[in-house]
Amino acid sequence: QVQLRESGGGLVQAGGSLRLSCAASGRPFSNYAVGWFRHVPGKDREFVAGLRLSGMITLYSDSVEGRSTISIDNAENTVYLEMSSLKPEDTAIYYCAAAESQVGDPIQELSYDYWGQGTQVTVSS
Image (cartoon, rainbow, N blue to C red; front, side, top):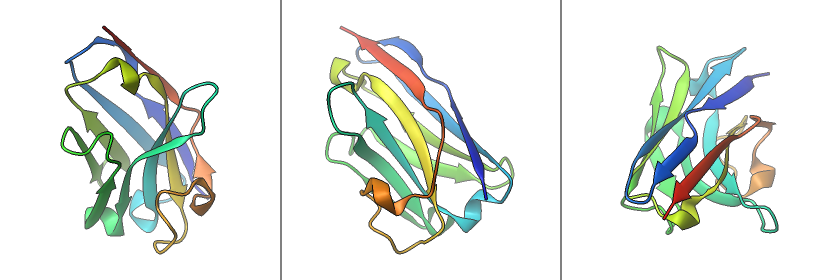
């Protein structure tokens, strides 16, 4: 089992950047597929970015493609999501998730077994 804790959220102006962190405890992060999701109240939770095989495979949603990078630091047992050119529509609670299986559909919530508590990102216009 693994426990996840997100950090790095906050208030940022449109056009700015943030780096979100997801620290894992309990087992090495490299054992898991990892995803970042975001949730806006009243909407479904949305896939943002995913990582497989300890970073060998990455995937991004169309909404963040080209301005986001997901990466893993195995020494720190942490996965990062760096986002730039932030927009007000990026405002959401961002969640980190981990999956025991590396072959599940990375954009589906049900593929993930463990979730963090979330970190709020607010982008002001």
